[in-house]
Image 1 (cartoon, rainbow, N blue to C red):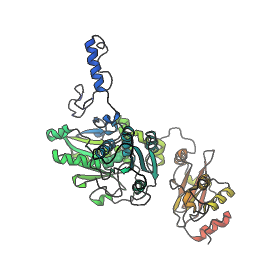
Image 2: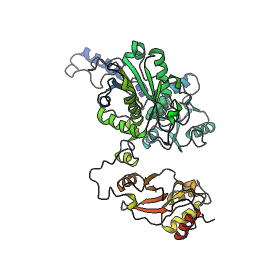
Image 3: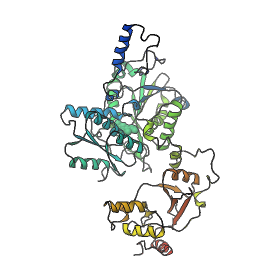
Length: 525
Ligand SMILES: Cc1ncc(COP(=O)(O)O)c(C=O)c1O
C-alpha cells in the first residue's frame, strides 16, 4: 500500500490523501470471471498485506476541516493531519520505531534486552508495540495523571508499568528519575530517551517539501510535549519552505513558550495530556518555531469534542489544544492558503475523561447538561446538614489512625496539615493492607498511606456537580475560604455525609474540635 495520491478522491485539490479506501477495490462483477483477473487480484491483495503492523506507522491521512474553520470566520483552508491512524494510535509511534531501529543499527540494543522509558503514555504505547513485535522487555514509567485507558493498553501490550506522582521533573520520585534508577538496577536495560532523541521523521511526506510553496501550506500548528514533532517538522520546513509559519502550542501551566512572559499564569496543573513541561526538553529547538501560543484545558477539551462531533475526527485532548490555537493563529491567512494542524492521538486514550460529560462537569469544563435533573440537582452544597469534623493530622501514626477510624466507625478521613493544607485522604482498608503487606509500619506517619489525588468542591457548587464527582470517586473534599475543609463521604443512599473543620489554622480551633470529638488526634501538644 503506497502513500501516493488517491486518484478517486473527490478532493483533487487536496494534496495529502495518500491511501485508498479500505476494502475491495474491484467490483464484484469482475472478480472470478477470468483466471488472469483472479491472479491479478491475488497479486494486488498480496501486495496489500503488511508484513507486520509496524509497517502501518506513517502515511497518516490529511483531512479537510469543513465546519470549524468557517464558524470562526477563517478564509484559509484548515487541514488536520490525523496521526491517530498510526499503528499504536499516536504521532509518537514514529519516534518509538525510529529510536529502536537506530539503537539496533548502532548495536546498542538487541532483542531480549529491557527498554525503559519515562513517558506521558503515547511513546510508551509506541515503544511497547515495537518491543512486543521485536522481542524486548518493556518497562514504562508513567505519571499518575495519565489516563487509565493508556495504562490498560500498555498492560495489554505486555508492559510492566511503574506509576509515579506528578512532581517536578527533577524530584527523586519523578518519572524521569525513577526510570534512571530502574536502569541502574536492571541488567541490559536501556533508556532510549525520547526527550534527547533526534527529532522524529516528520509527519509530512517528502513530497510536501519538494513541491514549490509547500503545496500551499502557509502555516502548521503543532503542540509541544518533548518538542520532537515540532522540531522535526519545523527544521524541515525552514529548509524547504521557509515561508511556511510554524506555530507552537504550549498549555497554560507549562514554561516552554517564548517569550517567557507568555508563561505567566496561576495555573499549576495541566489536564490535557502529552503537551507542556516544567523544563525545556533537550530535543526541542525553540529557534525554529516562529510563534508560540498558549492553550488552556477548557478550550482544548471543548474543541476536541467539536472535532469529534462536527468533523467526525475521533481525536484526543491535545488535538483540541492545537485546533483551538489554529483558529486564532490562522485568522489572517487568505483564501487559497492552507493551515495544517497536527492531531497527535485519538479519543481512545480518554474515554473516561473529556469525552465523558460527567468528567467535564466535575472538572468545571462543561456546564451541566443533564436533561432530567432530580429535584435536588441545583441545591448548593452548603445547604447540606453539616456535622462535626473528623480529620487527621499528618503526624498521626498509622496505628493511631486505624484506632480512631475504627472507634468512630469511619472508613476514611482527610489528612490536613496545621496550616490548613489538605494533604489527601486516608482509608482504613488501605492503611491496614499497607501495614500487612509491609509497605508501611504501624509507627509510620499516616501520610505514608495517604491518597493525594482527590476531588475538591466548593460550598457554592451544586449537589448535581457533587453527584457527578461521587459517580466515579468515593469522596470529595469541600473547600471554602471560611471553612477550609469539609469532607463528604459517599453513603449508600447516594447522598453525602459532611464533616467540617473550623476556620483558620490556629491551635485553638484544632483543640476545640479535638475536645468536641474527644479524639486524641495529636495536635494538642
Ligand atoms: C497526546 C500528545 N499530544 C502531543 C504530544 C507532543 O508530541 P512531542 O512529544 O513530539 O512534542 C504528545 C507526546 O507524547 C502526546 O502524547
